[in-house]
Each structure stands twice: as C-alpha cells, then as structure tokens.
Image (cartoon, rainbow, N blue to C red; front, side):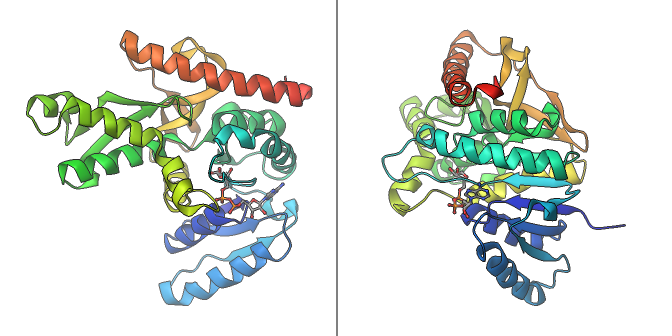
Amino acid sequence: MARSKIALIGAGQIGGTIAHLAGIKELGDIILFDVVDGVPQGKALDLSHSAPVHGFVPKVKGANEYAEIKDADVVIVTAGVPRKPGMSRDDLLEINLKVMEQVGAGLRKYAPEAFVICVTNPLDAMVWALQKTSGLPRNKVVGMAGVLDSARFRFFLSEEFDVSPQDIHAMVLGGHGDTMVPLIRYSSVAGIPLADLVKMRWITQKRLDEIVQRTRDGGAEIVGLLKTGSAYYAPASAALDMAESYLNDEKRVLPAAAYLNGEYGVKGIYAGVPVIISAKGVERVIELDLSSAEKDAFMHSVESVKALVELCQRIAPNLA
Ligand code: APR
C-alpha cells in the first residue's frame, strides 16, 4: 500500500515541528511548502538527516510550488504570520486572510480530496475563509484549537492535582480567543467530575476559576515569554492528533473548529465544538446539553467569531 501523503502549508515553527513529529511517527511522506525559497528545502533536508537516527522511512521534501501537494491525503495549514507581544490573534486577520486566499486556490487545484486542518490565526475566521476559498466540502475542512486549548487545561489541572495529564479529560468550546469556554462540567480526573473534586476539597472553586483563566490566556502567556512568536510544540502535536484520527479512521472525539449548520442554533460559521473525526472527515458534530450559563458563554464566543467573519467579508466581499 502506498504511504499517505501529508502536505504542510507553511514551513515555519509549527510546520517544521509537525514535519518532525509526522516523520518520527511514520505517518506518511511529507511535503513542506512555503512561499520563502530555501526554507522548506533546508528544513526538509535537515529533517531527512534525522531519518537514519530515528529509523524512519517516509520522505520529506521542501517545495515552493503548489503542484507538489498534488493528491495529498492531509493538508495542515500554518501559513501566515504569528502573534507578537501585545497583539491579539484578531490583529492578524487582514494579512492572514490574503494568505488563506492563496492557500485555498492551491487546495482547490491540487488537493480537492484532502482532509484540511487549519491552524493559522485568528483560527475560527481563517478556517471559514479557507473553506470558502478552497471550495472543499465543509466536513473536510476543520480548525485546530480545541485539542490545544483542552490540552492546556488538562496540563494545568494535572499540575494542580499532581496526577498524570493522561488521566485528565477536559473540554473547551467556542472560538480560539479570549472568549473560549473551558467547560468545567464536562471535565474530569479519571471520570471524577471537577465539581466533585471541589466537594472532596482537592481544589477550591476560586483556584479552579484561576486555572480556567490561565487556560484562556495560555497562548498569550507563551507569546509574552517568547517575545518573537507564538507557541508551536503543543499546536503541532494537537494538529497531528486530528490528522491521525482521519488517517487511521480512529473516530476520536475531539474538540475542533467545525462548520455549524444549525447545531447549537448557529449557522454558517466555524466554532469550537466536540466532533467525531473518522476517514470521512468530520463525521458528526456532537451537540452537548449546555446549561443556560454555558450556552450564554458559548454564544458570547460565537458572537466574537461572527464579528471576525463579517470583517473578512468586508475585506473580501467575494467570500460572502
Ligand atoms: N503561503 C505559504 N506560506 C506562507 C505564506 C503564504 N502566502 N505567507 C507566510 N508563509 C509562511 C512563512 O514564510 C512562515 O514560514 O508561513 C510560515 C509561518 O511560520 P511562523 O512564522 O514560524 O509561524 P508559526 O509559529 O508556525 O505559526 C503559524 O499558526 O498558531 C498560528 O498564530 C499562528 O497564524 C500563525 C500560524
């Protein structure tokens, strides 16, 4: 059987890290694409030099031509600019929207069958734009945010409880921004709801609220420390988790920015919700039974995504 083909659009920090992980995991042959000449080629050569050490067989190739992504099974898009200190993800909108137009045209022409995972920020608006510009089916274009945001929530909780992060389940809904909704009621330690852990005096409600806020600010905390860019190790791992579920038909239940067509009373935009990812792409959007406070928080987040999508439509009326 032929190996899968994974195309990475954007050979920067996240793209390069995904390529390394995908090689080590032997997920498929990798095309690293970038507009900058030499960078994807140099990174591909460097990564190839790690193949004998790790003993992986898949090929890694750098490219500046979209023709090289032809017939890719999975495309992960990180092309664009990342945040600098003081910037919000939304500040990237105008520049990255133009990038999505180019990437969408490349996908439409060369990889119309691919499962596409968008990572570029502001995430929920950019994945919307990418689906529009590529014309690919909505269930084959998703955004990566929830796996990362819930991983951050899980890590902070694991530190707090001093237990393995593996045993912590967490759910984060909504847009990938300040309004994201870490769902306490759907998060647990080995099945023990967080509310019970408050009753069991493992944690106070106040401390839990602080952790929720730190999760929301997780990306900004890293931007503040790095000063020259944004997080890339965990975003790369999270994007690959989604790709593996598609490639191996794992039917993982993961939070992702998915196209909403009436679910949660929302239509026509992307927002973070739990989905099942199988070989069909997004096989199902899971509609949680939210409390009225959770619903309000989710809708508040959806409103901020809608505002960004409207801004995209004003900048590029052809996407309306
Ligand atoms: N087509 C292809 N690649 C592009 C384009 C384009 N039109 N414009 C920029 N790029 C490339 C850059 O040359 C760079 O190599 O995208 C890459 C982005 O890499 P980094 O600047 O290292 O950014 P990274 O940290 O990988 O983050 C990428 O993901 O999480 C988001 O906010 C983050 O939007 C940012 C994206």
